[in-house]
Amino acid sequence: METGYQIPITALVLIGCMLAFTVVTTWMFRRQKTSADYYLAGRKVNSFINASAISSDYLSAASFLGVAGVAFLFGFDGIIYALGFFVGYIALLLFLASPLRKFGRYTVPDFVSERFHSKSARILGVIGVLFVSLFYMAPQMLGAGKVMGLLLNMEYGTAIVVISCIITVYVAVGGMKGTTVNQLVQFWILFGAMFLLAFIPFMVKGYTYTDVVAFIQQFKGPDPTGKMFDGGAYASPAYWLTNLKDTLSLLLALMFGTAGLPHILVRFYTAPDGKAARRTVIYVLLLIGMFYILSPYVGHVVRYVYLQGETLGVSPHLMKWLAANGKNLAVPVAGSHFGGQILLGIVVAGAFAAILSTVAGLIIACAGAIGHDLVVNVFNPNMPERTRVTVARVASLFIGMLGIPLGFMAENMQIAVLVGLAFAIAASTFFPVLVMGVWWPKMTRGGACAGLVTGIVGSFAMILGREYLPTILQFKNPGGFVMLLSFLAIYAVSRMEYAARGEDALPHDTHEVMAILHGPEQA
Image (cartoon, rainbow, N blue to C red; front, top):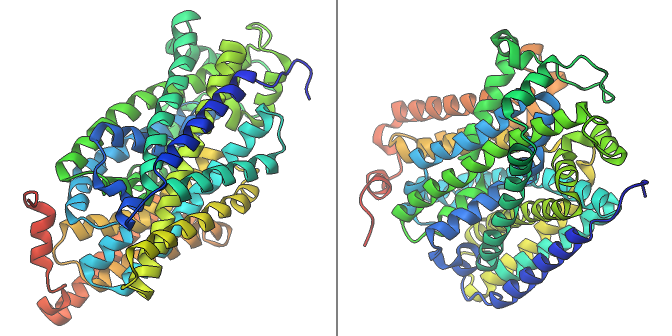
């Protein structure tokens, strides 16, 4: 163990308390009689509780650790993540939250399948859910391994295994009800941690945003990491123009990927009605808006204290953490530097809460895709409710255990960047299909399938096969570009089918569905 480093006892105590609460809550909500109870908490979740749970689900390791980490490395370039993550909920409020709840199904593939009466669309939707969710789960496990491993002196692999087992068990047993209550508590822990990280340097130390940015921009000294941003993002619009292609694609992915994340969308089905779903989104905007004001400031402050390490009394082991892994550990370093073992403990508990909450939501979404959409609706529609709940638990166990290999594969990547790729898949796969399916009556079954295939294949090819593509098609984040292709594919195929077959190309109940999506609430 490094000289000057102590295992944060406060963190162990807080995490122990959190886990004890999780165990009690999970045991209290262990009984689910129907699949609606397991997947959707009986559709009776209060708007503010739901908003807190959604915010906890959404403010993952990417937000809690990654946004500040990217701001630490790249300055205002990192703020684009906070902006995109926040603005996405405005799109969700305007276009999807209320109509999806009015439609009243269980999952995203449910909507696609029932809207277009297509088993193929359901299967493609399941593939999309798994693709998005597993990409999203990988950086959560990365955050778990890095934070729990380094701060609690655990091996990275051990931390991954332990956390995967904890989350998997409490989701499999507690279902959506237990998960919702746990996410409610976890949100206020992680929000409180970020609030303290911003409050102490700003109010106690007097580090204003203006002074911090001015110092970073003008700094000319040596940088041990060799990674210091050059201040271009602060000084000139030309900086953004030279990176316009990647900047726009990333921003579109972050904005509209939010409105296509299966583990976020499924939570709106837990609301009692469409009005409650809209009200929930408004609460979410307030909660995460406050969070995303704070986290980039924390990243800039950590850069500020890092560049003045000896002057501001930063300890040697914290300097080493920042030099070796500042992209993921800027937030824990801020906790240790500004509040010692106590604030570090609160921050570690906040990071742990963010990871637990998000991975739990992802497991529920994937379990719904496998258990409800695939096993029940494709293979055995007549399965009794008790058996459906059992299938849901088994699917949750299977998905939860996948977190272990995903964590190992993501070990050397940056959390926010990896999450950005998950947003790219969501933006290009589900957002176009959902928006067009909700708002365009002339969308056909073929158009829906074309959009899903374009999003899945296009994202996969442009992320994993980037180096084999022409330079003009090489994006750091291809989400915005593939999303536009998906919209084009939906429109082109739907128009061709409509031109060939007229009204027969449309689902037979299109007018009734549109009345449900956009009409008054059903009694």
